[in-house]
Structure formats: C-alpha cells, structure tokens
Length: 317
Figure 1 (cartoon, rainbow, N blue to C red):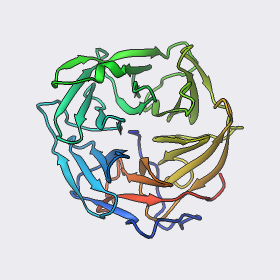
Figure 2 (figure 1 turned 90 degrees about the horizontal axis):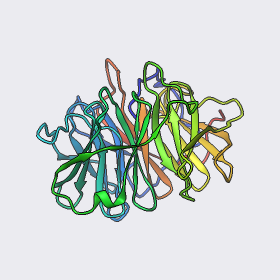
Figure 3 (figure 1 turned 120 degrees about the horizontal axis):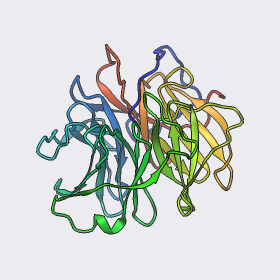
C-alpha cells in the first residue's frame, strides 16, 4: 500500500458517494506526523486499526466514534519503526507488514501482546501489503524485491513473540511481472473461491492474477484501462482499488471481474472532496473506510483522517 502520492484536487466534487447516517463520515487520527498507511477492520468487534509509517504507531478506532487513539506506540524493541499494510484474521490477530524493516508482526488485538515476528532474509525489501486466505494463510507483497511471501496458518498458532523466517511463496522473476525502480507489487487480496490472489503493480498500472495452486501469474485484462492500485478489496466479483495516482489522484477504482478473475471492466473511478492521497481501505458493512495517507505531501491536510464512503456509483473511468 505504500506508494508515492499523485497531485490531488481539493475542489473535486463527490461523485455519487453516500455515507451511513448512523456512523461518522470521518475518523480523526491524532498527530501532525502520522502519515497513516494501512488499515484493518476487526469484524467481530467495533474496532479498526490504522498504522503510521512515521514511527510504527498503531491507532485503534471504534466505528461508532469519530475519535481514535494510539493503541500501540512505535516500538523499536519489536523493530516496529514503521507500519504498512495490515489485516485482522479470524482469530483476532493483527498482522502488520513492516515496509523496509523486513519484518511482519502479529499482535493479539485483545491484549496488544506481540505473538510473532517474521523476518525476511532478503535485503532491501519493502514489505507492503497483507492478505489473509480462508484457510488462515497470510500472503505478503514486497514492492522492491520480486517475491510474494506466505505465512502458513500453522505458523500463527500460539506465540511468544519469537522471530521466525518469512518464507517466499513465489519468485516473480520470469513471470511477466517486471520490477523496476519505484513501487512495484503493492495491494493484494484473495478471491472468494480461494483459488487466486489479485495483486496490483503500482508502477505499471496492471493487475495480476496469481494461481495459488499452480503458482502461475497472468495479467488481468482490463480492456486497456490502467489501474495504479494501492490497496485492494474484493467483495464477490467487485474489486475496489484505492489509488493516489488514477483519476484526479484521490480515487477508488471500481472493477467488475469475470468468474475466473482473468478479465475485468472498470466501472467507475469514485472520488470525494474528503479524500487526500488515499492509500487503502477496509470494509465496514457496505461501506469503505479509506485512509488518507498523503505520502510525500509537503503540506499535508490536517488532521489525518479515515473517510467512510459507499461507492455505489461514481464518475466513469
């Protein structure tokens, strides 16, 4: 989910976006240096979590309240000096990608205790985003090294905070995914049938389908449309790709995938004046909770926020 910010237009008008009247439309993150990047919704609770790339602090919010609080301060002892993509799994564990630290951390959302730390042996990595499969396996993208990692569900059992290897699942060299300077693979999600990963190549504006059984990679045919996806969310066959580069730079792309996730049609580029350099989103019912990252902004719009959107329709792409 970490990626350079495009130019945003503060004057952009909302395009067919609605929000729930019984929940806040904006959630505030304290601090003028937050640069919040990842977000995870814990569906068994009213809580969501947001991480800061500045120092690794993790905020917790309640979907019923507009204010959030720092749940875990940055922790150099854990090596958590930055926090990128994150997810909460079915067991209530918060899984956090550590960007350039090369770590993935797993925390108990009930106690805040560190359960596991996984470390890649690959130097100069950028562990960017996280997806959790139905069987509990976790997949992690690396934006600087051509590798997708996997943490098996059995590796997440128990936990004493010990460090274990972060093992590669797929070497992307020779697959058609070409890594160049900048941010390459970024957002990641698992299809509902659990057969594929969908990953976003931020540099090239291409979405790829990864076959989990065959470990093969195929570009998704979008009919010529480019989608520089950051965070990805998939509900049924509708894919939401948050982008700070597409459209006016403050965009949620809405894409309809075919049954095999091999082709897709860009339905809309949804925007809203409350969006400022967004990075990713999490589902809250029908709504999206979208993070205003503002990475690289010299004068970020304060306070930092998470915005609630219902992207029923939008400005066509």
